[in-house]
Amino acid sequence: MLKGLVRLAVVSSFSSDDKVFPIHKIEYMGKVADAVAWYPFGFHANPGPDALSIFFAIGGNSESRIFFPGSPEDRIDDLLPTPLAENEVLLYHPPTKSYIHFKEDGTIDINSQKDVNITGADNVTVTADNVTITAATLLKLISTLIECDDGGTALSLFTDAFVSKYNAHIHPGGGAPNPPSVSAVIGTDTTTVLKAE
Figure (spheres, rainbow, N blue to C red):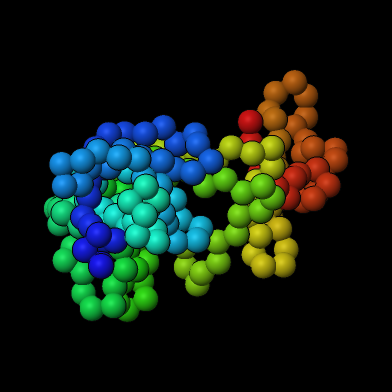
C-alpha cells in the first residue's frame, strides 16, 4: 500500500513562485507530473531542478501529489561547516552555500557569500557585553543623528579639554590678542551628538 503512496522524485524544472500553491514539475519512475511543494509552518523555498524530494500521493490518489524537496547531496561542501557535530543544526542556501549554523555549544555562526541586509521598521537593537565591528575597507554610518551613549548620559563629540583650549585660544596680529569674548559651553555651544552628512 505504501509503495504507491510514497516515492522518491526530483524537481524536473524551475517554476515561478507566483501561484497560490507552489506547484512544481517533478519526475518519478520515468513520469513527469505537477506536485505541490510542502514545507513546515513559516518556511518556504523555491527549489531548482534536480532537487531530490519525497513525493506523497494524498489518500492514495496519484493525482493529489505533494512533495518535500531536500538537498542532502549538497550539504557536504568546503564552504559549509559539515559534517555536523551531534545536536547541531544548519540552515543553508544550496546554490551559494551561505548558512546559519547552530553549534553544539549554543554559538550561532552566520556566513554569507554575498551581502547581508537587515531592515527594521522601527528599531534594531544589539545587546551584548562586548560588540566588535570589523571592516576590512570602510565602516560607513549614515544617519541624520548619531548619538554615543554611556548608558545614561550622551557623550559629547567635544571633550572638556577641547573646550578649555578653545576658551583660552588667541589669534595673534591685528591688535592685542585676546581669548574669545564668549566662552563655549558643552551642550550649549557644542552638540552632544555627532551629526552626519
